[in-house]
Amino acid sequence: MKISSDMLRAELEKTTAFTVFGDVSGALSLESVMLAEKDDTFSDGHVYLTDRASEVRTPEEKVHSVILITGSYEVAFIRRFDAVFIAGDGISIVDLHNSVQRVFALYNDWSAELQHILQVGSNVQSMIDASTFVFNNPLILQDSNFSAIAVSRLYAENPSLIPIIDSNSIPYLMKSEKFASDYPGNSTSAVPLQITGRHALYVNLFQQGRFQYRLMLLEMGEAFRSSAAPLLEYLSNYIQLAIGFVIDDSAESMSLPYIMKNVLSGEYADPNFIEQKLCEVGWHKEYTYLCAKIYADIPDFKNRTLHFMCDRIRTIFAESCVFEHENCIAVIFNLNQSDYTMENVERSLIGFLQDNNLKAGISNPFSGLNYFREYFLQAAAALELGPRIKPYKWLHRFRDVAELFLIERCTERLPAHMVCAPGLLKLKAYDREHKQDLYHSLYVYLKNNLHSVNAAKELFIHRSTFLYRLERIKEIAGISLDNDTDLWYLLLSFKLLEHEGAQ
Image (cartoon, rainbow, N blue to C red; front, side, top):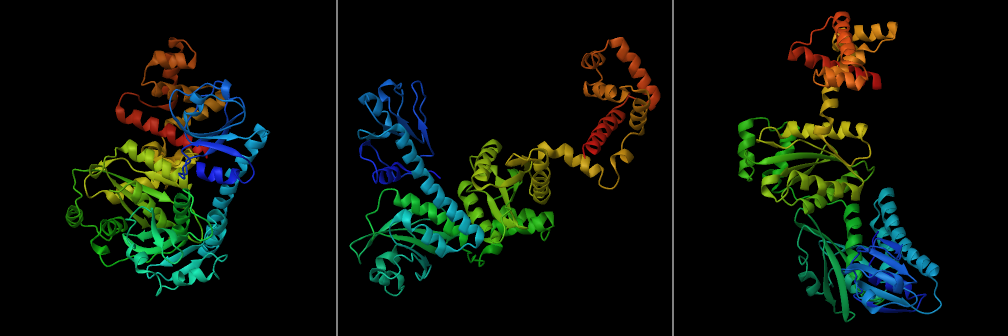
């Protein structure tokens, strides 16, 4: 995971003496450690190390990174970085590098532990206990009635926590801040903690606009650092993933996701009724839409995960329709109600899929209000077929798998050799018996749009030789190349036989 310059300083100062300049921030923006070389081009989001700062080229623009320096340096050089740590004498660059790596490893281990807890049972109490060392302060998870669900065991017996754990004793001010963090984003708010004279940080957790839980960090063990808020938000994402939410169904029948669920399931089948329902929520037939199907291959806690993922997608694509459908996530994008183009949607969706290790299929763009079910099936087909062609891709477009889709539909009931043009089978048999290349020559000719010169070049033979070969092909196969129907059938037959041979 990414760390902040504030976290870096706190950990390094435990073992190393530093002089610090610049803006030491709590933002989780640093993703790796790198050695700064003489001619390096610096970029944002890194921790750079150097023991020859005076020899390193000064960046032309401000770099939103941190640099750790041993030895001499130029003032103009260090002013180009957000924060600069100047190490004391006697510290080697190797020791410094190892120390920084240990800081990254510390928080990566924490993140990995949260993921592991989630995978083995979604135990919120274990998540809070595993996070105690990160904050060095007690954590409490409360429900919407401010009853404590989980409390850091290390602090659970502290008498100062009793008024906060007891929902009847919580100060009114803390309850009055109930909706300070607006749905849908999880953002941190601060509130005075009258009991200790210090403060508390909290994140309110919402589901479909409804306040459900509060994750709170109390300033009791040590004073808050600037990284406390972003770290609490980071933890809240895992807490939210681990908790099953109660969905408010009171107005669901009027909602766009409810309508779309019924459209995709076939409950709503009358075109006029569907159009009326969608027009009532502001979706019109002139608009342009996309359908996506996202598959979450996560055992045990899948339902909770889907709730969480749907919320995440809504924050990225505010105008989209997102809901759970057949143990997957359905997303309908309305390109007219947002600033997104298809390219923007794909780019942002790929980023989300990469972050969450998910796969998705996406349909072709379309207009009209009576084809959502069919285009969602396009997205489903892309998700089914795409990984077989390019398993390394996160997002699979239907247009990229359309050929395979057609080929497999052609051979659902009969094998390829029983569907294809019989003349091609004759050519294959003739080639095997006489060690010729007529089958491939015909394919090259068709692929080159019946251009004999180009076909001859590709086959490395003279044009007159190719024309003679073409006549033999027509004679043996008994085929005609004089109309579009025959040509289309031959090309499709080649694809069908090629697919059959690849299996």
